[in-house]
Image (cartoon, rainbow, N blue to C red; front, side, top):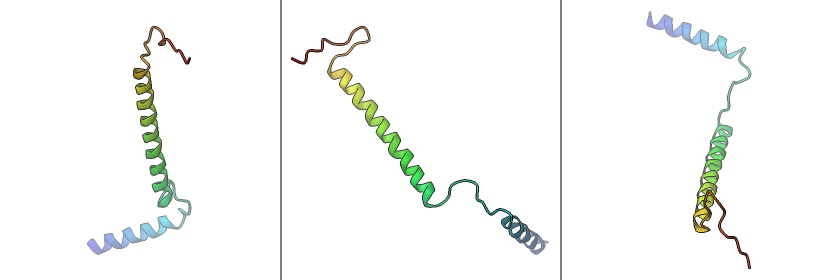
Length: 72
């Protein structure tokens, strides 16, 4: 029974592989590059937010009014 199941499984795999020429999804190096790009984007967003908050704290901005900006 076990060998028969394995044979039918093999036949199913072979038959299902033939019509499926186009793979659905991204595999291999493209997937790795995509994950790396998303990770890089997330890191850049976090750095951007951190710097923005830091600048707002340093320049003493409040919700009511911006700090007295004097560039003289």
